[in-house]
Length: 305
Image 1 (cartoon, rainbow, N blue to C red):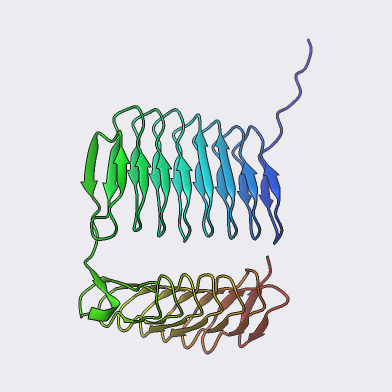
Image 2 (cartoon, rainbow, N blue to C red):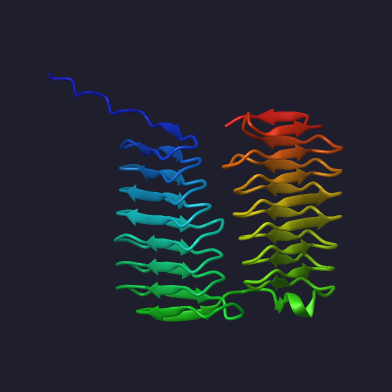
């Protein structure tokens, strides 16, 4: 009896800072693009693809895949399974579902989303999105407190459960809210509550205040300051200064030559992007993911990409 060759095992592949092409197998593979404008193709199996920084292309292929473009202006294409397409960071992205029932989640940008055939569930997220739900019985969740999405072919349209939104000029309050900047140089303060503070364009000064806040610089050379809570701060595309504060913070420099100060607390810091960064982890038991070109101080655990 003729023995058939064994199928190739599942693989885990990681890119570097350059533009790379990573290809999976018929198994459930994991691929991480890293820096650069990467192309990740899952082929068969229930794959997990993460683009990283750069303007990436992620192709799920057959199987129930999970695709996360992360930072950059990405292009995500599902395939022949019940796929999950997510943009977890910034960028003006293109997300296209496949032939079955997909879940698609945009992020903070002006996204173009296509559901394709199947009964899809789509979240536009903040930003001025263009959504074509396609054939099937589809549900679109829109953020009415942000720019309204333009949609076609969606059988059900519902409002996202979201917190109140205020412009930076109005200032924050003691309640949870989203504080939004403009294309200019803004000073935004979250004050009390667990806030989202977002600068948009310009070189901004963003302060979370009390609470467990999320602060996003996006474009420009920004100053981002957390506060006493457990904050998540991301610099974005400029040369930024990030100060975590006294909580257990998650700090992400983004692009540019950033300066990051963790402050007291057990912080997690990521500066693996284009640029030479300066990091002072501060008191506490901190973990930093950094390139060898970065300058590090007071960091208990150092990881390399």
